[in-house]
Each structure stands twice: as C-alpha cells, then as structure tokens.
Amino acid sequence: MKVDSGLYRQLPAVDELVRDPALGELVSEHGQTAVTDACRVVLSRLREEISAGDLEAGKLPLALLGVAEAVRNELRRSLGYSLRPVINATGVILHTNLGRAPLAEKTLDHIRETAGAYSNLEFNLETGDRGKRDVHVDRLFRKLLSDEDGELRSAGRARAPVPTQADSTQADSTRAEISTIVVNNNAAAVLLALNTLAEGGEVIVSRGELVEIGGSFRIPDVMAKSGAVLREVGTTNRTRISDYERAINERTKLLLKVHRSNFEITGFTEQPPIRELVALAGKHKLPLMEDLGSGALFDLRSVGINDEPGVLDSLRSGVHVVTYSGDKLLGGPQAGLISGREDLVQKMRSNSLFRALRVDKLTYAALEATLLAYLKRDYDSVPALRMMALTKAEITQRAEALALHCEPPKLKVELIDGESLVGGGSAPSAVLPTTLLAITASDLSANELAARLRASDPPVIARVEEGRVVLDLRTVWIEQDKLLTQLLVRAAAL
Image 1: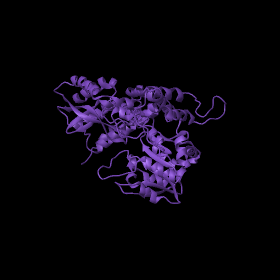
Image 2: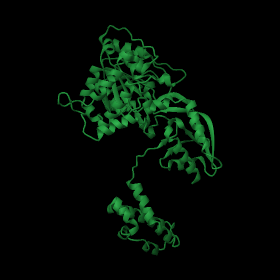
Image 3: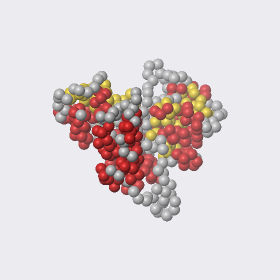
Image 4: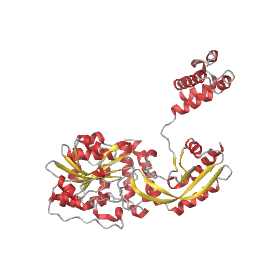
C-alpha cells in the first residue's frame, strides 16, 4: 500500500506544537520539558497511523483538531501514578495481585506521622544512645506470644500437650523468652533462619512439604541459597516420624516443618503430629523450625476457619522457631517475621544477612500499629479480620440494596449463593459463605463489561464466571457500595 508522503508534511513540528496556545495551560502546569516529550509521543503515534494507512487525507484534519487533547491524555498517562487503589470485588480477601492485606486507618495514621518527620527508629530516648529498630515491635510480640494471656490469640483452643523430656532443648523451648525479628518477607525469614541455624549442614524436611508458592518461590531453592543441604524424607503423601529418625546423622543441624499454605493433600496421607517432631528434636538436641507461611495471631475458628495453625499454637507445642508473613492472616504490611527461642533468634539478629534483609521505618510503623490493635482486641479495625468476620446475611443485605439501583434493560442482576476465599496462600481449604451479584449487560459480553470496570476510575476488579460478571461485596468497603453502583451503571451505559 502506497502512503501519501504529503500527509507527513501536514503534521506540525514539535516546537510548533509546544508553542500552540491551546497547550499553554499544560506548559504552566507540567513544565515545557514534560509537554515537549508528550508532543513527541503524540506526533510519533500519528506518523505510525499514517504509515499503517489508518489516517487518510480525509481523516487527518480531524485527528489534528484533537492533538491538544491527545497531549493532555499522554501527560495524564505518563505523569500519573501507575500504582493505584482499586475496588476489590473478587471476594478474595488476601489477594496477592491486589496487594494482600489492606492496612487499618490507625496504621496509616501512624505511618504518616512517623514517616513525615524524624523518628526514634534507632535512637534510645532514655539514654540518648543509639538504639535498635526492632525493639519497637519485639516488645509487642513478646506480649502477644506470651503464655500469660492465651485467650487473646487462641480463645477456646485447648493447649497443645508438651512432651515431658529430660533433655535441655525441650525444657528451654517451653520456658525461654520468645523473641521476634522482622525482615522484608517470609521467603527472607526462611532464608535467614536456615542460613543461621543450618549453613553447611543438613536440614530434614518431608517430601510432602517441598512447596512452591507464587512467584516460583520454592523451599528447595531457598534452602540451597541458604547454604544448607536438603535431606528429603518420606513420600509426597505419607511421612512418618520414623522417616525423620532414620535420616538424623552427625551432619543434621535442623528439623524443618513447612505448612502447606496453598494446597492440600487428601486421601491416603499421613504426617507426624507436631508433638512427635518436638519430642524427636528434643531427643537429639536439634532445633525444630516451622515455616507457617501465613501465621495467625487471632483465633480463626471464631470466623469459621478451622485447622489453620496459629503462631502461638506452634510455639506452645515446643517449636523453637516459627516464620510467617506480616501481610497475610496478620493483616499488616509485607514483612517476614521470625518468632522463637530468644537465643536462636539472637543468632539470626547477629547474622550479617539480617542487615541486608531488614525493613525500614514504614514497615515498623505499620507493624507496631497493627500489633497494638491486637493487644487492644480491636480486631474490627484490622480490615482483613473485619472482612473474614462479615456474615452472609450482612453481605446479602448490601447486595440487595446495590441490585435495586441496577435497573434493566441495560443490566440484569441476580443474587446467588457463593464462597469467598481467604487467599494469599492462606487456609487453602477454607471458604466463607457469601452472596454474589451475578451481572449481565444487554449489549456487552461478560469480558467486555469486566474490561470496562477495570478501565473505570477507580478500577473495579471482578470475576467472570459462566458468562456473567460476578461481584462479591465481602472485599468491598461498605462506604464503596454507592460508588461501585455508579461505576457499574456507567460501564454498562458507555
């Protein structure tokens, strides 16, 4: 196809376009450099359209009339934030792709007041000397993970039996102070713990626990990076305590248990209870570490989630070191948390790798505020916990109100029974009953309607199932219901 070269000559030069009075306001607002760059992008796009034959002689004048608006849109795109808030209507509470646990308002306030000024991050106000940044949250973890107030974390649970061993390892694990340090995520926590406790030696773990989670994070790979040697025992579906016992030798430095945080093995299965692993570790004077992945400081049974181990449960059972995430069931910021026997945690704090993996003042501020909510039993202020606690009746009432404002013929709304997910690699078998809004638009396919919702401001993230757009209000703030309705009606009317 032959292109009329004269069309290119009708395009203004970059300098000429920048001087156009229609762009004067943009130059004043964004600066000449930014506007010049945007003009180059717009003109380059027009040249490409001419070259492709999409802009013929009759269409070019109309396109040139819209150049100023095209430059404005390009500036909005290039200078706007890429990371944006969205409305999560998927019903997945800890949605990894949507940032996992949202932070509480008080947490945001504490971040704002400490990040917008100097703080005593590593300064001891009493002595005037240099301090340690982890003291701000370790003091709170010590209270939360002490045995003095088990009701706070594990209300209604029977205390796990602790084997009575004569060896010092088991005795220390039940009596020693519990300490906690913070790194940037749970993968880092596992890496630091393995490197500190087992570098150059063997770590025994069941084949059924060699998990891979999102982002191709694999336990064997992390173990290799840590300098420890993986010693697999048992089979994928069945591992017995005798398998661990036979694998222990003079090079064994650690027993490792990994929680299957994002999958289940059912049927012909077997794995030793934690008390047997604790007893075996005590018998051979070895540390026992458990990678919980999510890690809860809240009694999940109260919101209908069973069989998900909590941090305190593991520590009470005699596990020496527990690693878990801050932005999953805890409901705080992204962080890797290591809680355990003080002498073992102190070794990790002294590891030079700890400095490379440490977190900044924003994370400490967010963690401190989140943990204070737990100490005050203000669970409703933690968004992830609040969403888990919502009843189906509460969600149904909101869904009915929203449906009333989505009148046909443009939109057809049906309320159906459904299930919300915890998500984020937490409680893989746990579902929460909910009521879903199943929506169809008269002139749009489900995928087209979902795409329009994603293109709205703010974007709405929904599910598409059986030819319908499905919304779950469990993960939508109640104050967002009106806005969500408006965005849905607008998307169908475009």
